[in-house]
Image (cartoon, rainbow, N blue to C red; front, side, top):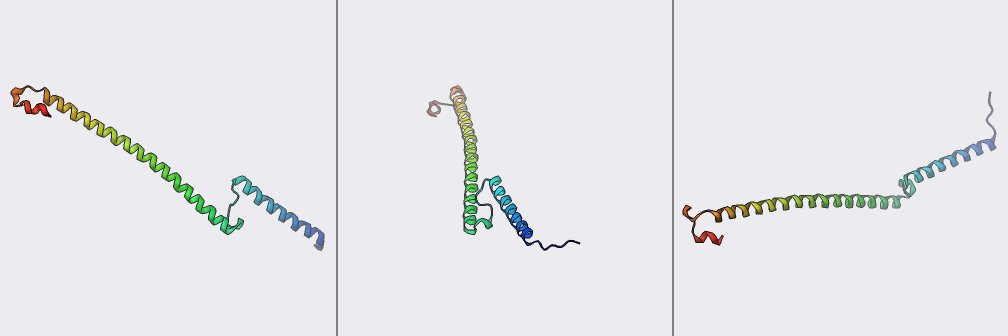
Length: 110
């Protein structure tokens, strides 16, 4: 039979549990690298932190979209350049044809 009436030991145990809890909370903050981890750290600070995180994610996505757009424009520029080259080739071949096929001096104006 155990008698649990040692008030000093119970107070010490309560203080120890409280200190362990605080130490684990501080260790979790330290491990995450963030000053504000949740609403328990301050509701308004947490809300501001979440808004800032959303803005940062949005800016990162914007940056990725710009890179994708640049790649798309480079591909389009390559396609346009290919079309220009093809048109130049067609023009050269048209101008090199002999006039006996019905081409006159007017075709030289092309």
